[in-house]
View 1 (tube, rainbow, N blue to C red):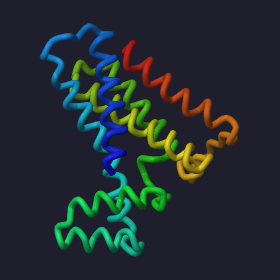
View 2 (tube, rainbow, N blue to C red):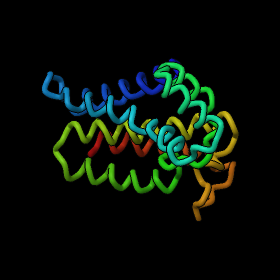
View 3 (cartoon, rainbow, N blue to C red):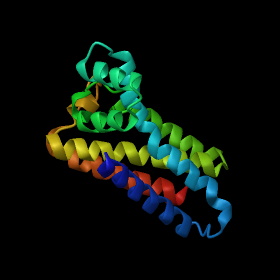
View 4 (cartoon, one colour):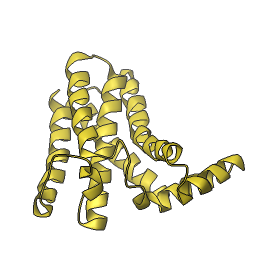
Length: 176
């Protein structure tokens, strides 16, 4: 769990630092960007809680609900981190959601002057890209991400897909 928090926290901080420096927003007035980044870093993990709510019959869900009744918050997070790969039907962690969220990200970056919104969508998209990368590294495929999707990317092209996500995110962050 700590590893995941560190991974997402450090990468979000690096992305926001790059945006802050590149855009020359070098004063304290950009604090909403960083608050939005912190929120955006956390929100994709709500997907795991949503999964537990929608699938109460599964063992991990039952264990999580039991721990919640006993108010064992840290144990819940530890269990969810350890059993992350077991949840195959997540809503946010799919390529279709990622496409919809990319459109939302472009909309927020181009039409809103909100630094909070900018930080939120950039960090959220970064979190999804990192999770896709981790899933690809651990399994060699993104089968769960493309489940229920008409889009098919051969396994030998997944590296390009993942790299493209990071490049696109960086371009959006810097130029919009």
